[in-house]
Length: 65
Image (tube, rainbow, N blue to C red; front, top):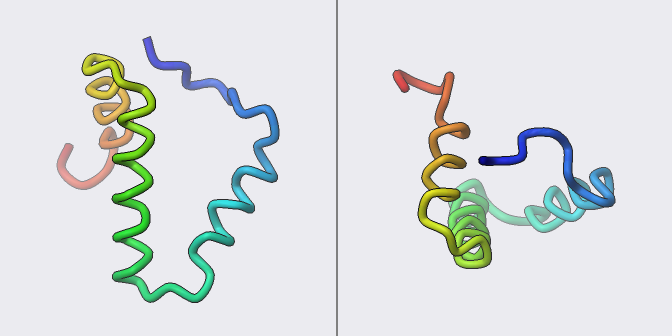
């Protein structure tokens, strides 16, 4: 089961790192970086069912999902 409660040891710093990583990027470059980051983190997680559940949670309430 996916942990949906805050689980970051340093959430403010982690969020700031994410925002800073986008500095100077165009919208297209920012989307590309996000896609790469997602693939890297999916590889780190490694478990198909965990990734499926995370995708379902992320999509919930967005668009027609």
